[in-house]
Length: 144
Image (cartoon, rainbow, N blue to C red; front, side):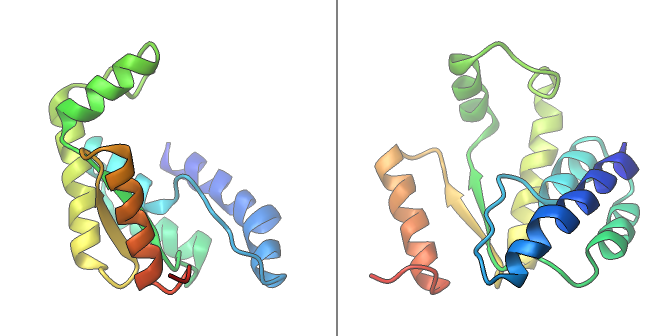
C-alpha cells in the first residue's frame, strides 16, 4: 500500500509538481506526504521509518514550503463528513483510528512549525478563513 502510494506520488512529482516549480509557479495540493504519515503511520500504525525512507527516496529534499492542517475533534469531523455524503472506506474506520490520525497531524505541526501550521477547524467558516489568512500573511504568501 505504501509503495503504491509513493509510486503515484513520484509520478505526480515528475509530471506536475516539479515542472510547475521549475516555471516558478505556485503548487497547491490537497494532500501530500503528511497525510501518509497521519493515515498510514498514525491511523494504520505502519512503520514510520519506512514512510520516511520512501519519502526521502521519492522526494529527495523536496518538502512543501507550507502545509496547512485543518484540525478538529474527531466527533466534529465525523458529523461534518456524515452530513455531506455516505461514508467512504476511510470514513468507516473507528474513532481510535481517527484519534491516531489527528494526533499524528498535531505532532507533525509541533515538530515542523516552520512549515506546518494547524488551524482550529472546529470554528465557524469565517473564523477558519481568518486563521488561514493570518497564516498566509505570516508565511509571506499574501500581503495584508
